[in-house]
Length: 371
Ligand SMILES: *[C@@H]1O[C@H](CO)[C@@H](O)[C@H](O)[C@H]1NC(C)=O
Ligand SMILES: *[C@@H]1O[C@H](CO)[C@@H](O)[C@H](O)[C@H]1NC(C)=O
Ligand SMILES: *[C@@H]1O[C@H](CO)[C@@H](O)[C@H](O)[C@H]1NC(C)=O
Ligand SMILES: *[C@@H]1O[C@H](CO)[C@@H](O)[C@H](O)[C@H]1NC(C)=O
Ligand SMILES: *[C@@H]1O[C@H](CO)[C@@H](O)[C@H](O)[C@H]1NC(C)=O
Ligand SMILES: *[C@@H]1O[C@H](CO)[C@@H](O)[C@H](O)[C@H]1NC(C)=O
Ligand SMILES: *[C@@H]1O[C@H](CO)[C@@H](O)[C@H](O)[C@H]1NC(C)=O
Image 1 (tube, protein in one colour):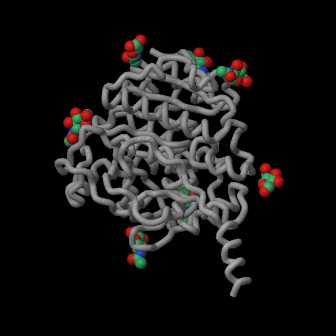
Image 2 (cartoon, rainbow, N blue to C red):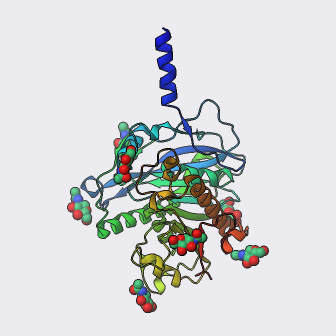
């Protein structure tokens, strides 16, 4: 018996949970998942090019305190796939836990209304899906925003619909810009389909979500699509791109690239726009903006640092696509700058953080292309 008990204790230590860093705002985090029915007969990644749905995950403020122990926050299938693809030890990503509460009660408020505009989030192309960006999303929600993340089946590494069905992603040739552009266009369609449906969904849920005003942001391809959806949609007030190469209108080198709305680029050390070898779209896009525009880069960061991976790497620093920056600084920088941008463009709250170099975050480089 004693031997068994000791073994169990050892096992307990080995599989010790690692809590995600807690958000800083006053709200706890609720989450609900929704299947968005949409028939798309030109889906490049779906079997026979037909998809019939995508997944919306709504993160929202709640006053309910979490009860019970924190739980693993990634689907086990997703964790296993990412451990292989992102060079982590088997079982590593299943150790990470959060206090996010499934279907927690909403805060009090009128159905379909909130002083905080709703934020729409797009994940990176091929991953990680929305839950792999929980640190930044939770931070925004803890301060009052509702954030809706959209995952597209077959494109993301793994998603699970609310009915329990899991969908594994297909192999994507990231060398094909034609394919990436097609995936990007699917994202733009999903964004519009979701914005059209959101008021109805909100009323069905009886939720105090803002159904008229939106800010869009995303990581990598999701950041590109966030900017792409800013053009010509009156509901969308501003857009933010985390380290994503642009496609479509934002990638043009002419006046069509002018978003005519507040837009923000936050990129890795080499995404300066002064080094066209790395990404010409970050060079051309800024010069066409006629509304509020900011470009910041973070020294020491590389592409994978712009999602929860930057925190995972602080425990096991083996993903070659992360940079030398301390992941605990990187996620705080992202939290601070993304929140400051939406606070300013959606709520009208000014922040000196957006107006130049920062003494608090000296590794954040301000590129003065701003209007
Ligand atoms: C899906 O669409 C792509 C691009 O149009 C095409 O190359 C591919 O053959 C199609 N796949 C199927 C199964 O129809
Ligand atoms: C959404 O938020 C904006 C900005 O606070 C506000 O002006 C608008 O009335 C809100 N809309 C709804 C439906 O709550
Ligand atoms: C669950 O929902 C998805 C998306 O609508 C659908 O493709 C799948 O067939 C459903 N699974 C079951 C078991 O009904
Ligand atoms: C973008 O267009 C301008 C002219 O409007 C030109 O000077 C510049 O070289 C172009 N940049 C690229 C990367 O093609
Ligand atoms: C993957 O991780 C191992 C340690 O687990 C490390 O030795 C190796 O260098 C990593 N691979 C790459 C390509 O960085
Ligand atoms: C924010 O406020 C500061 C000081 O109050 C001011 O210098 C700056 O121009 C303002 N920034 C914006 C974008 O309004
Ligand atoms: C950021 O890195 C660049 C290139 O390595 C360097 O020139 C610059 O001084 C660094 N900036 C800061 C604020 O550390």
